[in-house]
Image (tube, rainbow, N blue to C red; front, side):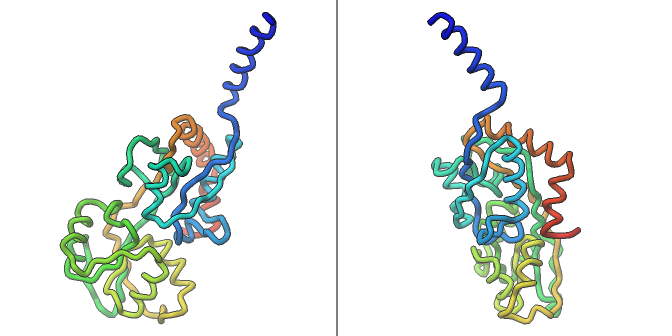
Length: 244
């Protein structure tokens, strides 16, 4: 018995030295975010980065697909172990945010023939604006104030519909990530996408993170993410879906 009592602490220390036990990590993932997330194929450049980083510590990812607005809620309520495409502006605390793993570049898009002058967020005030769901949480106070005073401001969870509506002239501007716009434009069949557009870069880049309920898991992810970036694998994953 004495020998067993001496051995057990050593076994525990040895296990701790190898980090946490590998497990399946349930990650809340927003729907309709190609090329960052392609839910029908369980892939996408953002989802692949998270899978690769967690795989370095032996973990696997089980995506839990939800409407974008429910992603932070699912993490806050403990329905998942982690949530992606969020940051401190998501409105939840008591979770542990990773280092930024992906950068989105949101823009305003309008038809070139309309010749709109849009140099900053204030220039959207007298335009009809169709933004992605929960945009007011992520695009800063100026955008939030504009949206609250603009009775022609709306949000649309399906970003393919944003493309249709701007090309069909049913909204004057759409606000969305530039890579998402290019992805859906290439697939659009309901509108004439041969029309020229103006891309108004009026927002700073948005740095997104993964929120974890476990600090230890967050720390593991950060360590693996650094390795992924240093090895060039991070850039390689992005290049699978978009080019510079």
